[in-house]
Image 1 (cartoon, helix red, strand yellow):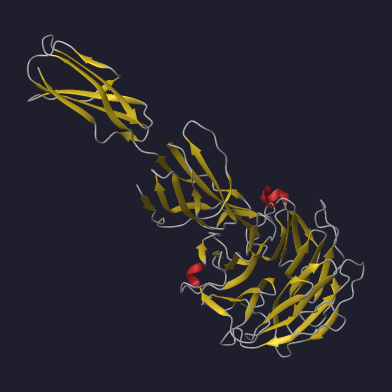
Image 2 (cartoon, one colour):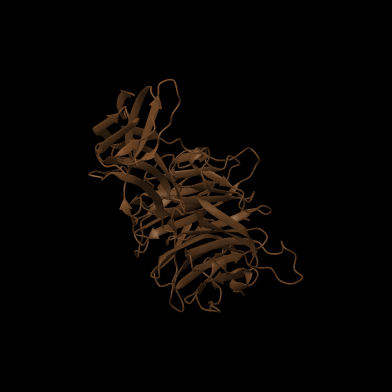
Amino acid sequence: MTLCGRAVMAVAAPSASASVLSWGGRIGVEGQPGIPDNTYHLRSISCTTQHLCAAGDASGDVITTTNPDGGAAAWKFQNVDASRVVGAISCLPTLCVAVDYSGYAVITTNPTAATPTWSSPDNIDSSNALLGVSCPSTSLCVAVDNSGQVLSTTNPTDASPTWVAKSVDSGHQLRAVSCPSVSFCLATDNHGDSVSSTNPGATTPAWTVHTGVDSPTNSIDAVSCTSSSLCVAIDGTNDENILSTTSPTSDGAWKAASVGTGTFEELFGVSCASTSLCTAVDDGGRAFTSIKPTGSASDWELDQADGRWGFYGVSCSPTAPPLCVGVDQAGNVVLGHLRLPDTLITQSTIRPSKGTASFSFKGIGVVSGFQCELKKKGTSASFSACHSPRAYSHLKAGSYTFLVRAVNSGGPDPKPAQRTFKIGKPPNTKITKTKIDSSKGTASFSFKAIGSASGFQCELKKKGAKASFSHCKSPKTYKHLAAGSYTFRVRAFNALGRDPTPAKKSFKL
């Protein structure tokens, strides 16, 4: 990158899972009448919540919104930094700090206003380019430059903030910085190294260089840390390496996942909304999203999020539900919303005669929990929190439907996984009385069910003839029978089926 019975059912997994994020179309937030689509280049973006985003461009402009989904009209366009490249921006609900490639910083303390008030550009690093900035609170902002310096202020909301510069990585460019809290910051450089501090807001902060993060010595151009236990970065190679570590304060190589497809694209930005959702973007308009950011390349899902232009940056809001916004080289933003999860029942074990049922299940996508419902036919039920496996006992005879849905901060799976089953067993049948009158050609049978029954079916078959069961009730009487040999059979039934061994009585007339 340049500075620019016992029934057991196993359910097979689907052939392909849905994308973690749903990316919408391009929104031309810098589009002006009569101006070509690619006049402006958005270079930076910060979304502190799903209701506040600010983007910076290559012409000194910042575009803010409190309604990212509101279309182009919802993004407020302001020139705040002459014609300089706003290469990095960091926002909180009551603070946005933007820095440029000429060493200037501009600040607003009312970013959610209809027209935010920005400070005059402040040349805090006159001979260098500011390449990154991160504000974990209104009492601390940290910027980095192309000469290996860290610049920090503990009063960014004052009318004239005081920035203190410290050289921490001499001879190298610090390309990006991420401060998830006031007690931890990490910056990356153009030599495959990182620097970190656990007291970045101190009067004399201590910064430690960690070598060999990316080997060989590639430029690590963007980084996002959710805490001091997880940092994810990208390098400036055509391999499109996504680097991750759970020990960012240690020396040595981070885990590398090469997501490049051999088409010479280059990653330009990365952002993690949480430990289970990170997105990286490249100059081919592609977004790589993972719910397991410390995993391998196969754990990063590719979406062609911008079908025409290349991305220069991305920001994912840490608030729920997360929103990821990419900015491209033609003045567009592209929004990625968290998809609702899918749910899969992986195994079910039903013991009808014992009145028990157990279900194992999993979620597909970003999942924060599950909700289950067991509904007996003819009754009402509701979902409640559950976990896998979910077991039920002491179930009464009847037909049931088990439903389970995964949930995340966006809501529940709209199409719960379900399994229908029956508890109990078919009844037995007993003939209690038989009366045969050969002289009159009549036969009468009384019978009963052993177990719960909803009805009976009878059959009278004469030897050598065909017959079939039909509904009947006790007693069942037959008249005008011709001479011959007969077999009477009766079976009780219920919702679980028919008596598999009907009661029978043979007789002659």
